[in-house]
Length: 313
Image (cartoon, one colour):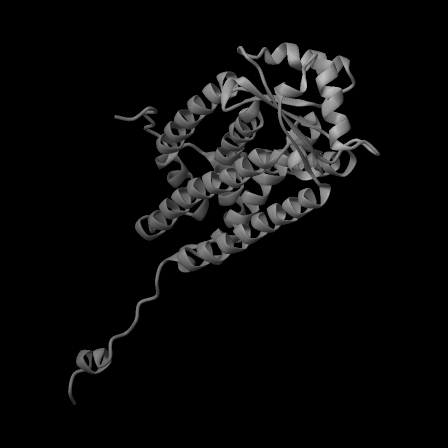
């Protein structure tokens, strides 16, 4: 049973020029936003103060956020920790203000006593810088390993197309968070790495079908073979994307503030990753001149074959 009953081949590559222009514009806008606005780094990267507060009854997170905002902490991150009566408050670093002073200000804002304070911890910005450096290094190593893997499994044109598609997806996701000034923390970084894995899986499925059809369909041009392959994998792509999106929508709307950024990054990444597997990875391979000769293994002459085919004189 198929979700889309396609009898004719969809001419995806006929839209390659508009798709190329669209992708280039989005990438340029992302670079411009990152250069001007940068990212709204979370406390995982900038450092700050953690204050754990305990209540006798269920805590009202909305009221806590409102009280802290009125007391000069508009950027405070408030979330449940362990139970509905335990609250974790994350505060951005303040110049010349110690963690103990911040905890006292939180107590005054929330009208609490010292018995309500479970712990106060300070995370230095040096830790944040190290996490940011390691996170960026992790993405670069992942892209390099992907380039080597796809080049060994398929062909260097597919490998370059896959890496361009992954860089495209990561750049646009970062551009979205920069443009909207959404908080970028470790959960969002994990989502970006997950986007790389999702997009790569989609690209490998498409590349595998293209390679297979290059070997089966002998009398068609590369553009037509790519269109046939994308049409054949369209059902699988749509079903996989929709099922993933349904789960992410549930996380986005009812998952809470803690994973809101994670769900946002993955939702956008799944959509843009599906697009890039069709109009970036495949398009790059086509523009680089992928052909049957590159994917069909050369016939190896067996030893003695020429002598056996030549009659004795």
